[in-house]
Length: 184
Image (cartoon, rainbow, N blue to C red):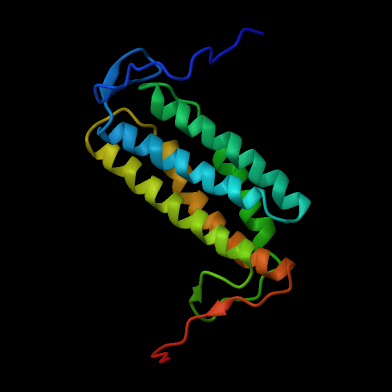
């Protein structure tokens, strides 16, 4: 196998531009690069979660999501390239359903927290929402972005909300319920 990254410091971005996967160059301040960066940050926060003690079956699904996020990034980096299929959406929906089935009904809003793992899941969830907003903004500029990519990020943040609750349940830690008019 040939090496993909033979040189890391290229100096080609020193002028404020960067290369896309199709060979074109865009400003580092472009909405496309912003969206790519949000997805990259999301994947990094997911890596922090995976470095924590979490159940093996959850670790396997999250590792698969990390690989899928790399596919999301590749679709963003190559205008016109479509890799996010209905199968990606189905995977998320099945994961959410499996984690949701053991949860008690939610009668109140929850705050991020409980266990450290669940708190990190909520960080991941909020970054997923930010990445989704970046993609929505990019699509609003008539950029070539598949609807499946936008749907994937929307479902992903929902999956992480459910996972935060499931993580607390598995670790035998209560969710932190929001208390209306809470005073210190």
